[in-house]
Structure formats: structure tokens, C-alpha cells
Length: 360
Image (cartoon, rainbow, N blue to C red; front, side, top):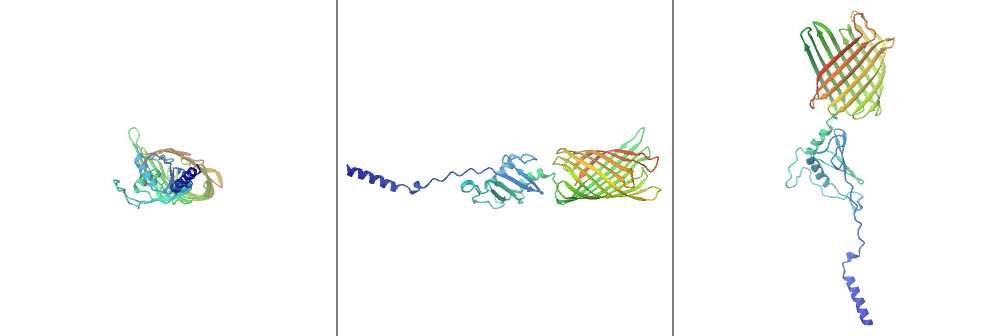
């Protein structure tokens, strides 16, 4: 009996020694699932975010082919290391290489892409094909430098009364994507009715604006006005002041501003005069939809030595895009001089303009 029990114990011991030693190791914990990635792309100075479902925040949804292309790049990124706490090294396909059966990608210009998830960051390159599709989402964000628009409108009527009018307008903006922005604007308007000139006006403004904070700014500007019908040879008003962005969103902006400076005025058959002056105004813009924009501006210029002599301006406009580079703009303008220099000059001028605008 004792011999049998001893043989049984020896047999069990030998079987234990013959087992795979790895079976005695403590089992590894199951790695945690790596959270899905969130990609952020820097395009033309603007950061766009792509969620795993393919949604470009605030812009548009990627097409199926675009999302497949993006996921192919994501699949080549390092996955989570042990414990899911960070990236583990993994192979990367050389830039410009293609897999079997995959069409070559055109214009493989790199773009910096920041991939974040579970504490990991990795810079990778996206193909020019994907960049081209995503760049349309940032098309409304102009690149640094000069850009602007030029507009022209014409109206002719005949019959019981013959009338014609035309207008030219231009806007130029220098925005280096820093705190400083330069804006230049001009408008020329001329109208005739039955051979008589009813409007002949030139307005121009040059403004340099500097953002002190995200909402507070200072500016310097020079305004110019010539109105032959009102017998005004020129009114030049250099102003320095400050403003505040009361509302500042992607779709809606509302600014108020004010400053002090001077007013240099010359009336026909009169000597030039000068005076201190102060200006106050507001500017409102509402992007109703991706193709429709509503704008409104109002301002006043008062002479320091005679506040009863003021020049007031108001305009409202509606612009709708015809194409990427063309838009149709309707505008209504009101100019009011509280104290005209001549009795035969009306205090208020109004104009309705329909203009085709080319952007560049």
C-alpha cells in the first residue's frame, strides 16, 4: 500500500515537471482598447477637427472615399502599447509608396496632422488627395496676405424720363494673420436724369487696425469724401481711436468704435476750413448661410467747434454668392448733413445699388 502511494506521488510529480514552464507564468492582463482617434488638421492657419465618424466640425461630412483614405493613414499609426497607456512602435509606409492594387496618389504634399488619443501625439503626412478635399472646408478662410474685391453696377432707363447711373466699388484688405489688419475701401457713384447730374460722389477710407486683445482693438484711419452735387470739394478726416467687438462668432459680428482727430473741409467758392473732430460708429455682419451675408454700418462725424454740424452715414447690404469668385450685392445708402452749406442742397442723399462683385 505504501509502495503504491509512493509511485502515485512520483508519477504526479514527473507529470508536473514535464508540463510547459510557460503555463506557470502569471497571465498577462488583457490590453485595454485604445480609444478612437481625434484628428486635427492645420490648413491655411485654421485648425479643423475630424471625429471618427468622419464629421468635419462646423464644415461638412467627408465622403466615403475620403474617409477610407483617412482611415488607411490612421491604421498605419502606432497602436497602444502595453496597458494601453501610450503608443507602441509600428511600421510606417514610406512617403509616396502605394500598396498593391492601390492607385497612385496625386500631388503627395505633406500636411501636419496631430493625432491625439490616450495621451499619444504623432505627426504624420496626409496625401495631397485628402488635403484637396479638406481644403474646401477652409475655403472661407483666406490665406495670409492681400485679398479684396471689385464691383461694378449699371442702370439705364428711358421713356418719359431718361436716367442712367453707374457705380464702381473696391475693397482691399491686408491680413498677415497677425494682430494687425489694413483695410482700404472706395466707392464712386454717378447718376443722371434728363441730362441733369443727380449724383457725383467719391468716398474712400484707409484704416489700420491693431488687436490689443481678442475683442479690444485700436485703429487709425483717414476718410475722404467728395460730393459735387452737394458742392463739397473735399472732406478729409484723420481719426485715431479704439473699438470693441461686442459679438464675435463665426456667423455673427458686431463692433463699436470711436475716436478723435480732425476735419478738413473745402466747399466750392469757399476757403478751406479745419477743426477738431470726433467719430463714433458701429459695424454689423451676419453670415445667414454659407452663400448669403447681411451687413450694416453706421457712423457719425462731428466737428469739435460746432457739434451741430455733423455728417452721418448709414448703409445696409445683402450679398449672395454666384460662384466662388462672384457675388451679387444689393445695398442701400443714406448720407445726411445736418447743416448744408448752401440752401439749395438737400440734407439727405439716398442711393440703391445693385452690384456684381468679383473677389480676388
